[in-house]
Amino acid sequence: MWLRHISAITILAFILTPANALAEFNPIPPQSQAQRIETYTPPDPSQIVEELGLTEEQIAQLNQIRRKFTPLIEPLYEEWNEAQQELETLIVSADASETQVRQKYDVVEGLRSQISQLQFERRMAIREILKPEQRLPFEEYIQRFADNS
Image (cartoon, rainbow, N blue to C red; front, side, top):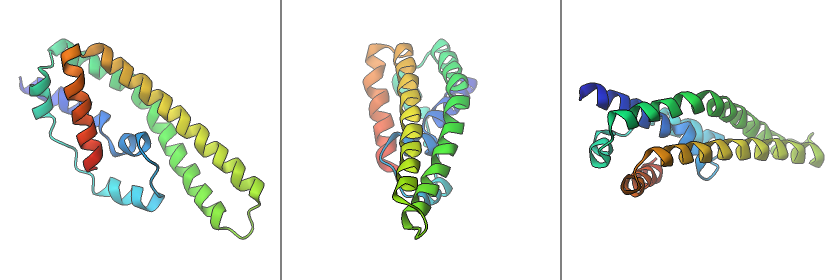
């Protein structure tokens, strides 16, 4: 049982990382992002693990999803964050042309779109693992976390 909770904590910690939470919802200025990441405290997932009644097989499948999507999402998020900061710099720069600002904006939006697509695919993969009666409580838990982060 203890191992089950550790695995679930690992899975939910990935799903609820500040990078994922920040990228999945409204864009936040880079300074606020850094502050939120520094003060981030992962939620205690034992309540939702118990509430959902996750099986060992489900936990193993969730771990597979984490291993699949982490190397895809995290580098894109870092690239998006850097491009977002560059965009903010260009916007206030006296030397940047409108074309340069618009081009950087297109890069930022393209990265945001890629991240959003991968997050959706991850969510769909999680949906397939959860039983129908587990889906709503899981989504409500994720929403509560997002509202509080």
